[in-house]
Length: 154
Image (cartoon, rainbow, N blue to C red; front, side, top):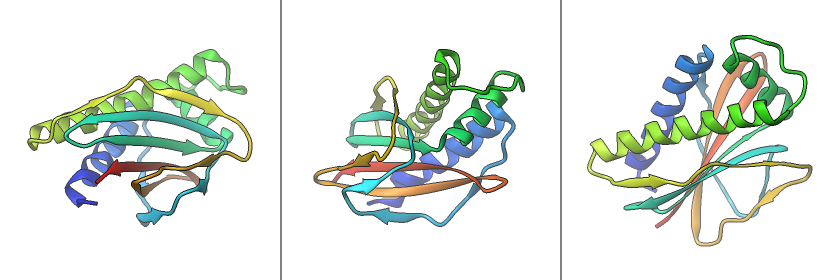
């Protein structure tokens, strides 16, 4: 997969996380995932269409999701994933992908994004037929992590 496709996701995620939540995300070691793969219990999926096609999957555990939702709501402690906190986390994914799409567009790569889909459950597995998946781990401090799995049809 072309690194020119991945860097905008890294740049957008770090910028938006800092602006919206105040979290200064550090980049972990990027790696390739083979399908099918197990995932955390909170997923937000956003589709990609246009010059590149595929999807971005934001994966995190419930503790991280609650922390992000609390930060997005001005520090109000969130103790459960209610509709408001699910909406906040989905909107964060939407903002990150919108920002990444703008960066790609400015580099001559036209991309459209779909509305985010929020999934929550145990023992989830993701299978991406015919797509290579690059995992972008974002270290959020205090052993907290969010992964962005970018899968693109080559």
